[in-house]
Length: 316
Image 1 (cartoon, rainbow, N blue to C red):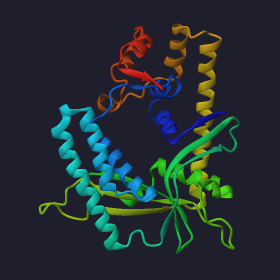
Image 2: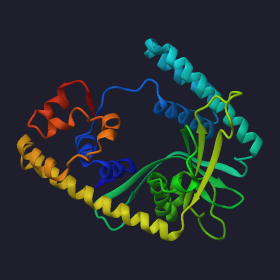
Image 3: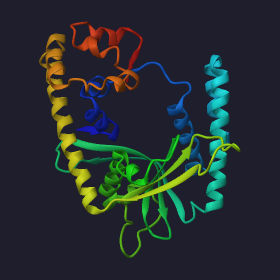
Image 4: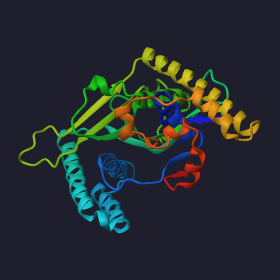
């Protein structure tokens, strides 16, 4: 049985060579981000998860997270201090916004960090896995949703957000789990109509601004998604196709590393023909961690040795 996440499916679609290194071989870049938009979002996400899931003060959580990083990377003190001030302003304003607008009215957190793993229907030997940061029940409507947070420079249009494959993946997972929905960790009982409807989620977006006198609101937004049965079925069909493709690819690579004993020439024959890189020059140059390794996988270099010994990657 192999377990596949939304991230793995996304990487498979984006670049099969990156999938090969990241998910089959299990290597990730060794360098950790200290500051920047992505890690800022991670820290704010962690603070709000602590707030909703465990009743923690999110500003205190941020303080702890940044102090840990300051202790580990004192050379980044100026950058981390500036980022901490921005993160604190964003979260403080978010709490004020939620209180003044009643955005959380009727919502009750029923599970935090719920890990789901469910068989992928129609694809033997493959399961889907997801970690839902929060599952919330709207006690007014009876709808069960995932609650997630994102940070951004500007708000994306609702219809664009609704196309995000991660949100659809979560919705399919919740739908598949609906027959055993108490596996989410819920402490409530279904009403006369059975288990709650679980075909969507709620995304809260926080803009990366300090809300100064020169900035212009809005600074926060809520987007709620409800996918109709046809959309859920369509997304499941895509996941079944991707699951089958990944299962087949893993079987081919398993043969190379067992029957072929990991012979680099054989592995290269397979990876070059079946897992070529997705050539997007301007994108790869800043987004892909394999930007320097990737050419080596085509020119006969010992890329496997670089992965193992360069210190640039670590194997999970």
